[in-house]
Length: 366
Ligand code: UD1
Image (cartoon, rainbow, N blue to C red; front, side, top):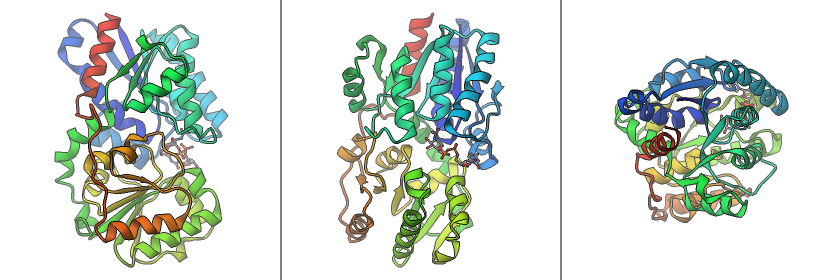
């Protein structure tokens, strides 16, 4: 029996790492189950990809497709063409995809067209905003997958409403939290605080990369002004995604930033986790960071008008801010004055999700 897990973009690596470890257990090898990794190359920079393989102790991928950048159609099509060749050669019994990036839907589609089963990890999440490319990727992947592994209750309701058969759906928890729990002890030894010369709990950590926030000059300038304002009270650490970096350069916004807003290159997993755990506040438009901050009980302002991860707002420490900067400021000053939400950890975010997924897959395949 052969399974190929797919990684493509930065948020995929920490989701596949615990699955890789779970399938490496001797009990699976003993019964002849092989697990391989295919990297599509959607993200290709050292600090968007390679550093994650080192930090997460992932092996060199068995297959590397090298698709790189391109429009959505070009990127998705290139992944399909190259992945189909791997599938024809390798004849796996199952393809496992994670998350919602272009590589997720592309590899799922290539597999089902060849009659190969697909398992989707982090299934069922919906922002109900179809202008987000990730929302389209989620809906399409879930519609054709054979195993749907769900992280939170909202996912179960969403899949039911879309008419997915109950027997395909498994509520297994969150593999991203498996990685977080596994690597926190290493993050505790990170030197990043010395390197950046910042004190624990004395900074806001910022990540922004969604097209809706960073592709429009006025919006990006408004967000950078907001960061300048935060920096009057707390230092701001901002590891900048390549898309955002390109736009800051293109719109010539670099000079507008206060010296207490520290723009740095994207970080590896361990250093980022260290900063996340000890942040006073996190400001983001990412998906996964909403979950990580909820687990870590760190307040998080999500600068989006929808979230596909509602449990982080309902149970966790996440605030869905919307588009108004004044609302973000209001929450910031509330938190600065000690008015924070009491968060709880969602069900089955316990570090053992990958084990549960491996058991289910092996139980069905073998
Ligand atoms: C992609 C995912 C998004 C995820 C994000 C995390 C889709 C539709 N989007 O968006 O869900 O949250 O990754 O980072 O799959 N670039 C580099 N080096 C790299 C990777 C990208 O310079 O290693 C540049 C590209 O050339 C492009 C820009 O960054 O100009 C955007 O990259 P792309 O992968 O297209 O989309 P993301 O915005 O990163």
